[in-house]
Length: 384
Image (cartoon, rainbow, N blue to C red; front, side, top):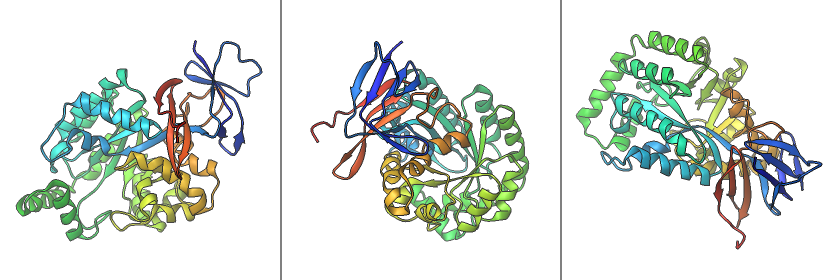
């Protein structure tokens, strides 16, 4: 069994930062902190680095762009999965839930059959992967045709988180119908008649959505798959999705709704790019305001996995919280929210998902990454 001793780093534990704490990895686990014996261990000196748990990203759409970088331009799926895997490792992410939208009335990779094919490709690539790649299946509830695809993926173990999203115009993220039209036009580069058709179908298909959601939620709970809700816009919406067994509220659009989600026992999730940019792309509540108000449990990469680490490292200064509190937003909290009890913190017995972070002119970068005790990245920033 491989034994690696990481020494002389500032180690971010669940509730404190310990300077010069040695961490012993044996196989895929953290075996000891400041071990009494290190016989046979290979020492790695991490002086000047911060050692923290590997980041856990519950919602990242970036794989869709790896598959389809331009409209109707598709790369082979194994190639796309390999590129996303490497990009996530370089960002310090050791567990990623690739968010795939099942929205057959939309275009490109959000076609149900194609999305299911991508989900299975992620599952197949895991045998070769650097990090733990999982599938976050996003169900657009106005799509009557998606449930059989999602049921199949759940039964095959190819969906590890399912979320319900409703992009029907006039509510949720797009209360302004014209704003939604502009979003579709920008995202899918299509003509006015196609946009009219998408909007009409979504409005019509909203009927019967609750029954489809209930059936999928029952399947997910039976299989131990966590359930999330997307763009909750009111306490009433939170109560409705809570009744389905939802455990995560993704991107609640205002403070009142975020507070309601917390009161109902849901974990809230916001986008890390929102922290870096200082605003929401759709004009909803800023992630920083959620952190300041104490209603943010998790941050995700959303459309930019590389934003996760620098956002977290900025939060102690921006929000007046401790570094362990900031790090928990992308490690321990998302692990607990989705039932991944084996990871998310540096503690004896936990999975050895670790990242060594170096400040590069004020920008934190993952210099080394271990996923399940195996090296996933070695960037060698010693010259900087």
